[in-house]
Image (cartoon, one colour):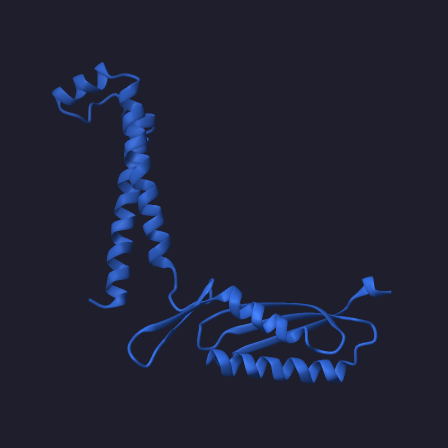
Length: 183
């Protein structure tokens, strides 16, 4: 079965769990229309009436648990693979995978950016697909920093980052701010 078929299967299962759990929750809370007509057989109706108010609570909790499980499955099934949401995963040549935490990658690029002359603080955010991420860079500079030297250093740092990770940034957005606290 393909990845898409598995995701579809889990999505359908999650929707069934949410629907079933929501229905049981509505029954337990007495929120269904036509509440005076019995939905249960005679034996279950006697159990229901004998267990009042605990029977409603049991059905409510029994409906809430599958609804929450279905919701978690639905969120997991709809998550798009190969996005930089904390972990970079690249297929290896031998059939395995290399996983690196996104914070490690952004931290390395931030440390490299701080080597620029006059750089006081750097922040990097990666979004998008692994092979072509969007790179968002913010660099806070001292008032004496030379912009041309900082621009060259940022360009070289991003090129080193892309070569190391094995990706080609689809979009690079660099913001340079003057650090006012230095005055």
